[in-house]
Image (cartoon, rainbow, N blue to C red):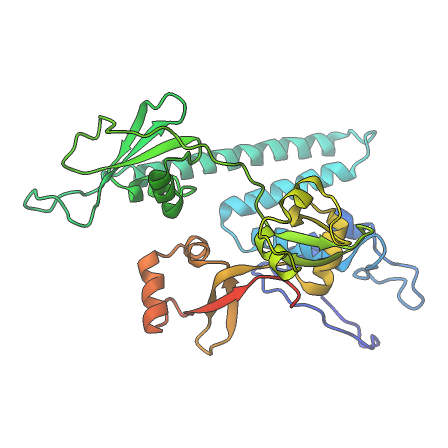
Length: 362
């Protein structure tokens, strides 16, 4: 970004660290939501190429969303670069009117298809490589052919309707390696409570038992379906979000309700209670959310948060829980536990427990 010498009263709102900064700047300037708000009629600045109006059709929060959603493409690998080129070309196609079907347009279409094919090939190769890595047989014995005491029981994946055995894993860890979407705490909970997890029943089998036989399975316990997520408190006109809470129980507590389930029905039916409406934050109108986040920032609530600090003890990021930290940084639970307990840096960062934050506005 260039700032002319005659420009006065400059207020720097945000800075973003990005590898391909010039390309990123060009992308932002030519983004459809930004480009349409370019200003060239301001006295003394008629020839400016980087002057845009914020606050009318383009809010500052909308601009931040465009930046945060696309900055990854300018820091990524070859796959993300190809995806970016693909998106840029698609944007160029959209900018051409329907009557401009000339040779250039046909060439752009050809390039887009070619890039899409390259992306599909790269993603397929990545999946095949990941499968080969994860499909390596889990080591379950020592060099003396004795069972490893650290492996634990095998895991059975069982059809949630027929209760037929689908697959046997050497351990819970093996399942998580093959499909990271599965979480160990949720699997263990499904085993203990005899409930479904991702549509399947799960059972742990001692290594001295035949893993191909289902032993003493208990009927599936029916669970109540719930809509989970942050809860927004709205005014009586439903025109403004006043606060955001971790969940319905927390919202009920901070708003003077005796029962933790008092807001279940008002949230479900979006009915007024004590002069306010309560609704899942993600279900609120986007303009209400953008207005709230412009003033208070994007909600990040947690019961047991984990803070990531640099070597100068500056807070870099907060994670909502240990699992969120492990998943985001691709580290093991043992590594995180060691850093937390012994206060030692890992990969240049310290990790500390930061307690809880149950509502956005205290």
